[in-house]
Length: 86
Image (cartoon, rainbow, N blue to C red; front, side):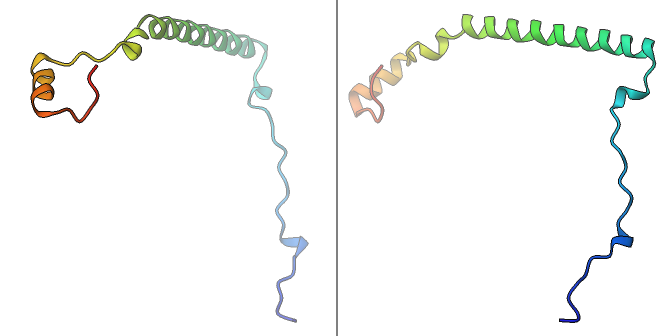
């Protein structure tokens, strides 16, 4: 068992403390960052609300029965249908 690996505390790298990215910003830069972030959040909320309204408005397409053409219904009536009639 002499060849088993052993930890070597001298080979460990020093740990670097993690800093927040805004720690180095001054007061004006933080204020600008907050303004930009708030505008981006407002745009996102507006986009999500518009998307929800659009989906609600166009939801009938998912629930309405699919209308098949006259020729498809005729061929189904004459030759048999592999899918149920709608």
